[in-house]
Image (cartoon, rainbow, N blue to C red):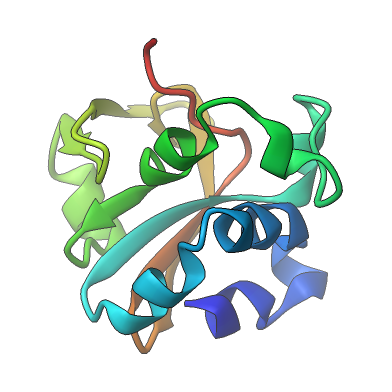
Length: 134
């Protein structure tokens, strides 16, 4: 999964903030060791919209729950995601899936790149951070 996030920064964007958050919560190893995972991965630009970067993400209250809200237990390719109206995330919360004129969305985050296959699952790049209901 980490390799997939670091694979093609020129095309996909950077994921340094996401990786720093995962590392701070000790979630990198569980993601790497789990064979069927789907990650909706916000870019650094998405985190920057919330004033977050790799230097301060670890201080975000509820970070572990927020990160779990980007992970699905099981491998979902784009076709699988688009075939449903909602997805249950690893934290137990549901997200809405929709198709609009400008693309596919999970909640209000546009899915910009899909089906980045990694040894441990699949990554979909999103343009905004998913925030679970409080």
